[in-house]
Image (cartoon, rainbow, N blue to C red):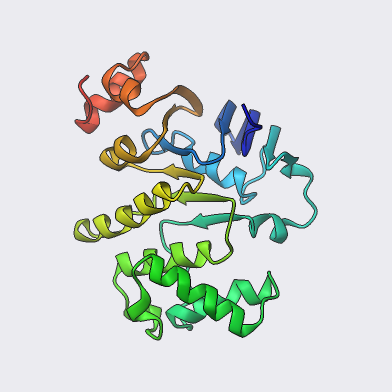
Length: 247
């Protein structure tokens, strides 16, 4: 088997007296879609943020693309290879849709305006936002903002995409359009790690489900095994609360 795109060994992370990650081991291979599930506060988002160096672990090792990222000197260059989509979109309200997708290409990748615009238009079309390129992001719906954020991340042509509960800030009727976009990325073979509470999406799209609880990975298996035949009592209890699966 090829070397993992992401390989995490014995990661610990503490915020004051609260130990959020307690010796996590975790790997993701090229082309995999891995969904992290679990109750709020279980450590899912912290794990994701460690992969993008938005949080620095207290102990352990994180290797991405074969490199120990805790030794990386040029964090911006590293992050240019890792797309990140947040709950709250993190778009620039003073820019329009197209400009949001061009900015990092020009600043980080040093692309010309012409090349950045060409790439931006390609990915905005891919996520169905081609008719909104000149719109101020202030005027967009939540679903449109999140699709713009996904396009912006894709413009950097990352080897890995991270999604931190990308639908949690959306009205229910807008969730579907974002999940459809993410399904398309999965179908295209994009390597993705997704923190989500959307169990249906996780079951349909992911290659693996990772269930976290109290800072540890409790279960790591195929969607069918996790949802239909979970091994852990903690997994069973969680799925029962979500009214998903057959447990």
